[in-house]
Amino acid sequence: MWLVAGFALWIIPVLAYRYTRRSIPSHVYCITGIALGSVASAASMGTYALYWLVGPFGLIALPLALLGMVGLELSLIHETPGFLLATALGLRSGGVVHGIEFVYIESLNAIIWAIVYGSIGYVLDKLRTRGS
Image (cartoon, rainbow, N blue to C red; front, side):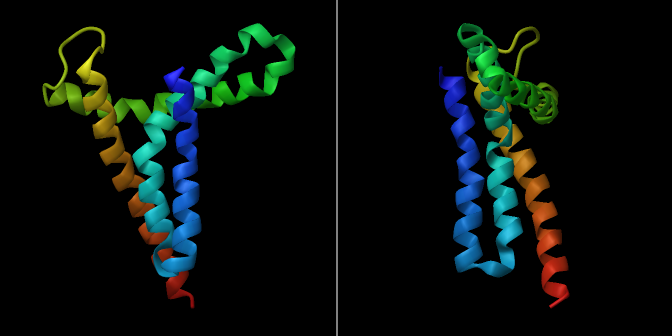
């Protein structure tokens, strides 16, 4: 059930956007991108977990299943860099990921995606402020 709680992590970038829009309007997209990147991997896995809640509810929960499938695609994108970097750094043993290795992989994913999305946000902020 803790994976479904990961779905709630999507609220963090929304709150970051709302706060920075009022307090630091020149850096809205950069800070929102950092917040989004920090939770993207774990939140996409939590969104994928919604797919498995559909079983008892049948056809009524079809939108939940579709959202879970989107979470699977997002998870496949956001999990790979941290896994490969953890393997290259020797932070995980061969075979199935278990135990503390999840923490290493998710921490690396948070750092990687915060840099990527924060950089995209920085460029968008510069383009937005350059025009005005």
